[in-house]
Amino acid sequence: MLYSLPTEIKLYIFKLLNYKELCSIKQTNIYFHNFINNFEGELAREKFCDITIDCFNQFNEYPYKLIKPKDVNFDFPFNEQLEEKLKNGLRKPIPLYLPLYSNKNTVICLTKVCGNKQCYHPELPTIIRNIADIEECLLLQLPTNIKSKEDVKIVYYYLNKLFNCSFGRGNFDRFIFNPELIQLLFGGIHKQFYVQKSWLFMYYNFENKFQFILNHLNVSESIRINIALKDDANYTDILFKILTSGGDKFNEVYLVAYNLQKVFDLIINHIETSKDCSKMVANIVLNNRNINFASLNERAEKIEDCFQLSNIYNPKIKFSILFTRQLKKSTIKRF
Image (cartoon, rainbow, N blue to C red; front, top):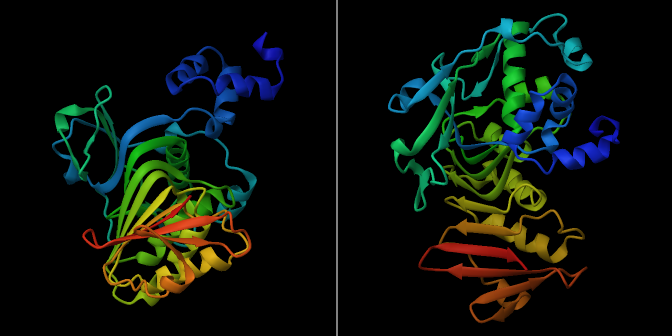
């Protein structure tokens, strides 16, 4: 009976199932296996506590399982566009990870925890609470420099799998996936890593990291970006683009930097004068005690401890701006 239903009805039914139930159905026959794979990005995702890219020796204490895939396991055709790009081979090796000092021991660590336990301490989210709580730890060792068509197949297959998972935390402090390689493999297809929380430190390779955030991260709770660059000219434009166009991907963006005055001024002007604020991030935190609020005294309505700012084209669009001196932060919220 299920076979004869229209595709949209079958898809609706499968969307009601969790990941384990989908896996069970995929094993029943080849038709359901192919149908679920075809709509993988729209169905329930396999959930991991954490995704981290780091050197192998950082995970020695974990109860890990090492996965080193071989190209013989991947007998599938490329799409026409990728086949065209690869028909004459790669002109030069392309790194899977950035920065370029990555070595052969770089791995992707995927963890799951026991039951409903939280993997990270709520006040120290970058620290594992208890390694004993880890139920499963997979260390995925992929080719770090893509030199051949076989390397491309391995990386394409596993990146596509990761794009269809969800993660409690995305740790991309030391390494990120190379945006240039993602573009080569997937072209115009919009590929993102779905995480609840993420932390990134910008002290090198910041241009590629910002592009990775803008194009390949989807963070449902909060992303924290620590910027160690003193010259705000290096990051103001890309930060402004993330904050004003990333509302569908980021619930909250938390920024820590030496100088955020220009970013603050641009955001305030955008709230007031933009004809379309619909794509703006709803919650923005600027961790910097030196932001000057003087201009808000004339431009915004003061209500208790907050300034309230409206858009000139649509007064119903309002944002609150709160400065918490003790915590050295300014919070901009849409309401």
